[in-house]
Length: 393
Ligand code: MG
Image 1 (tube, rainbow, N blue to C red):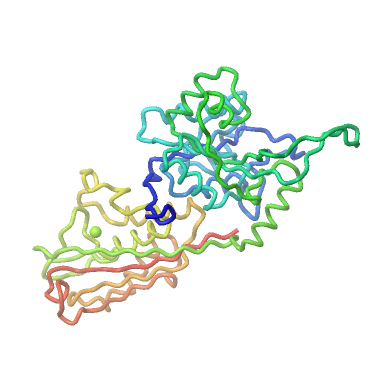
Image 2 (image 1 turned 45 degrees about the horizontal axis):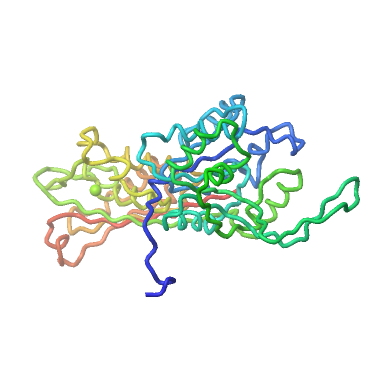
């Protein structure tokens, strides 16, 4: 088997934490507001940096103590906020200590002022860690000639051979980076340096010119131009969900939040609302945030008999917290009976109400399966759902 078709080694993203540093004051920006809080095409630089890492196990953001209230307002609930220390190293170490004893195995440390980091750059770092690198980080080989200068005149030259410009995220085995920070009393300007000083190999993966660090006033404008060119001011995501519940004894079923009289009930851990479960999973799917079982484990007795609107409300709020709004949702119920038509508009209104959107964005329809299969034999009800989520500037 050639190397390029070898299967990717698995390193589940829920075992990787992301530590985003945003405790600095950014004095070179010449702005009253620290650069990480400045608006870039409608959202803050830091919010964009955080959103780039959706789907990882845990996101920790180090912020300046003076910014804590602001950070809670903007990011609260989506990330773990940690008060930064006097230096960058102190802040990173404080963030890393939070992960001690958790099931996190690796950590990506990222500058909060690099909001345009691409999935390709993040993926390259993760792939290197999955291939058992203890440390990996993006770099770009220097191509310009390097001069020394003073008072506007060239005073000397430096050899660019073998020189790289360092970027983030810098990825590490958690045990390695934690040990390096604990061992280094004096800290370092960058985590790769800290680890390399311990004699460990750090793999260089391809960086990206657009992964710029907002530092000087012109950088924000350049970042805005890159965003417009990418066309990623609007991010459209599609998710699907599928669910089945079996019939059992009873005199009603819950479907899409509406109680419908029937000569059977539906069996399930919660209220067995098969349509609402499919829709909830469609939203989690669009967000790449797993499924209902991940957020509400069936092993947890507190969800026994729960009204399924708890699940749907959670998914809708998670989408909002990640910057998405619902474009539309479409739910299909598959059953011979009960008849859905008479209840469809009530179901549409109910789902829309729970998600906090206009009913026109929600469709509920039904089909029989022509008496074929388990739904045709009236052993249960199946549902499929699709949801579109949109994030825009
Ligand atoms: Mg279900």
